[in-house]
Image 1: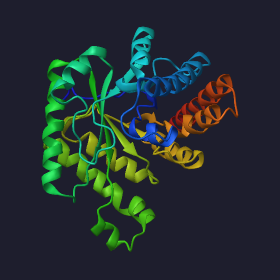
Image 2: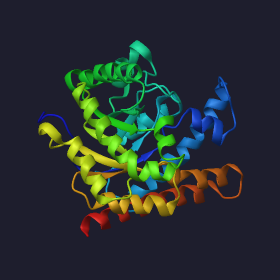
Image 3: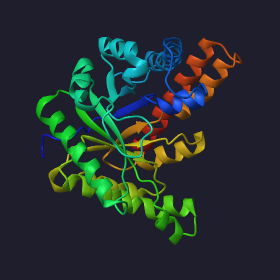
Length: 306
């Protein structure tokens, strides 16, 4: 297990959103025209320029990274690679409850076309959920894990979401806050262990925000069990408001094994909406995205220092 892992600081600005970006930012459904695809690509370029501005203003380049999709971000992927940025690219189909490959049997070809630092998957996996569904997902994920570790230069980044099962919420009388605070952390540990036991071996786990330090510690212990001592964890923003993301970053930053974060919508959504509505200039939208991203870097690094 000593070859698995990534434990250097990693501050990711993710904007690989596809279906949700298309529907919620632009209000478009179904297949896109070339013109619509180009418009989304232009919007993503604004986010990328915000990232570049943040690096230019002092965010350490060797700790900064982006996560962007091939569908709308092909030009960004090529430029980021040329600039030497840490780069992640998704492998999953967008907007599905069950993990499957975006490019089916051609998934490896698409990874190697860009050779990102990380190949990322977003997976909804509840260990108390449908066993057949979990087995199907784990089999596909094992295939990807083995490919990345055996045949690719790209590392494996795993975004774990643990949506509540109806029976779990029923036990909590529908209280989603109680689920997030009291049940989800335990389920996340179980999910990590089940996936590891299925030979799914991420180098970095992307983890939903946690309110308690001890829950962060339990996540790291699970991620690093059995000799996986170099595996890193990063906290994700879930599109929450600025205050909540700050709290999650500060909590995770103080726990060894949490190496950074992946905060996207909290950085770019409001500035991008304002720019598209012509309530602000492109230059100001870029500057605001840069400011927000840089702010989260500062919060995390202060938390680590403390």
